[in-house]
Length: 275
Image 1 (tube, one colour):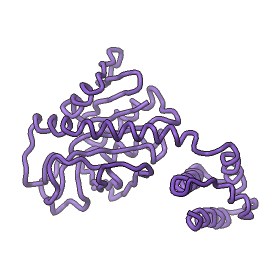
Image 2 (cartoon, one colour):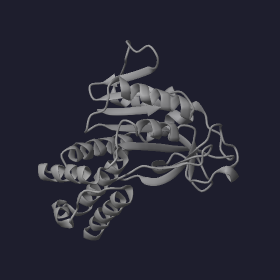
Image 3 (tube, helix red, strand yellow):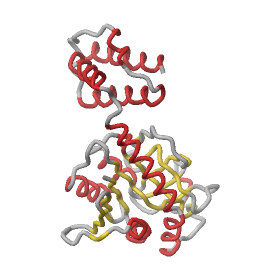
Image 4 (tube, helix red, strand yellow):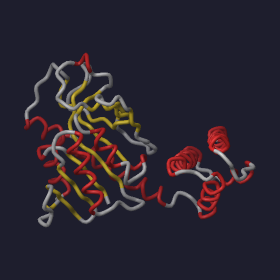
């Protein structure tokens, strides 16, 4: 399943048309459009609206192991960026909290990657923009989506609609920018779907048993489990080799947080050295 979050109908229309999505007439709270393998929700503008709507969509039909969650929309940019160009987001800064979030892009793709900064209000002065791009939804989307799927199955595709303080943009422009890039977006989604399906069966049974054994020995918390899993996944993507060599690393039960961190750091270092 592909879950898509879009802030405005004008951004969603080219996607709805391209995939021939039908409106969910049973949905009372949001505009949701769907097919057998896709759900698209129109969230409204702003990170709070985006977070609430994305959570609603993902809670309604929870994602499975091979599913992906995608945010698509237009954004502002610094001077020097070309209007109409699509980017895949690799870093999100929330301007009001100062917090940074990082997507985990493991798959190969044809987009250029950029950072984006989420503001609570429209931005009219580039002097306040620290990252490459800006919008009002990305941080809300990411925080919400990350509660349901791992980082490497969360994607943000943003098309530059204007350079902050320089260009003006109309609804027709927004529709055109998404429409002009819909085939590139579709190619990426298909690629991400294929990767997610591979990821779901990426580890052999023996490897999964080993990961669980390490988690148990080290008494790993949920966040540390995710760090271990992602480190092992990165290693397999980069090398194509299994992780069974970790059996020989000499782990034992831990008695405190310091020992746990020491052993986990050793595992990650071993994965990096062997990559």
